[in-house]
Image (tube, rainbow, N blue to C red; front, side, top):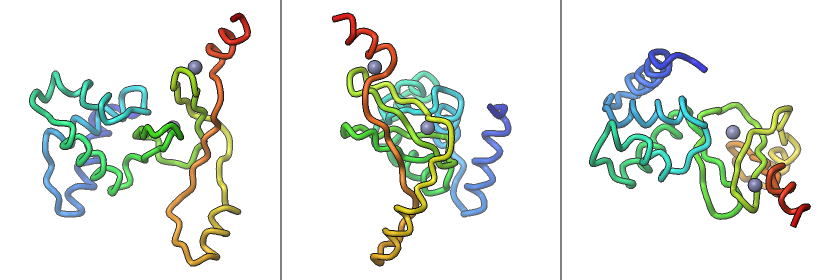
Length: 148
Ligand SMILES: [Zn+2]
Ligand SMILES: [Zn+2]
């Protein structure tokens, strides 16, 4: 994990390059995503920054996350149950999502669905990226399921 100052510098550089303002909210929200468990819902981001930024609203958090997504600093991951988490790890990777407890984890190894992207492109669609989510039971929930 990069040091906080490096994390901040990267964001400041991206914002300045696009002529966007550097605000405490943008700094703190980006820092929260980079330094914590990495996969966070907007509600979790709000909870984690509310001590430092009292009065921050959920719409502000969403707007900031969308801005960071637009800058390519975070990626939105649809977890398949209607929830969206934001991920500060931006290189392509697959996820496992537990349908019982909702735990989301990175799956190491290649996750480059080039074939899917190529086929999407062939239809005239302009793909950004594709995500693979493996849906099932995490090890802890699977162990409980066996016992009961
Ligand atoms: Zn689970
Ligand atoms: Zn991830």
